[in-house]
Picture 1 (tube, one colour):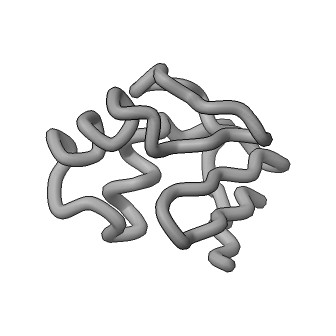
Picture 2 (tube, rainbow, N blue to C red):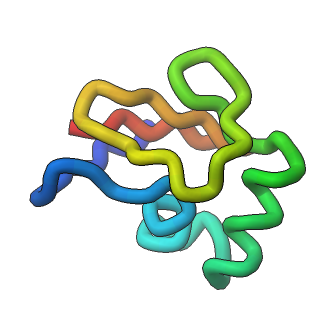
Length: 68
């Protein structure tokens, strides 16, 4: 499990995936989202620029990310 501390109001989903080095690039992060590989708070998230805020739980592959 990864705890990600936000220093802003929100972070876009693809930027979060890239910031945590789960993807090698923003383009690869977009593909993960488009392919339905990302679960946000228990539901598949298809919006690449979804605003991820404190309290959100993101699951991608074997990683669980808790946003604080």
